[in-house]
Length: 117
Image (cartoon, rainbow, N blue to C red; front, side):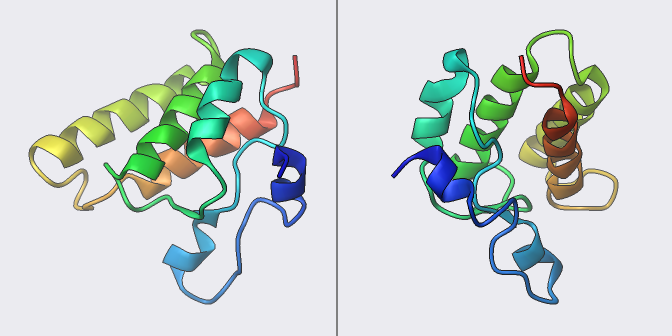
């Protein structure tokens, strides 16, 4: 199955009223950059819960998004996610939350808004 076929359903999986199910991605990047294909393949086709900070799928998503934005783009979103992830993994909370769903969503939105190179 190609990435394009996976993405035909759009960015979000089956939408429901809950925030968690609305935050599940089918695949974040329709056609990844050549250098990022290995991260897209590792991610697979499973739903990804943005609020499941520290899970394998979540970490693979972060790797893919970081590859897509490179070293100079989306700096603020990348920095904010790194701080959040570090706090959640070390002390268990960041700004009163136990996950980095908002920061990861912002990073995904930034990558989605980038012009394709």
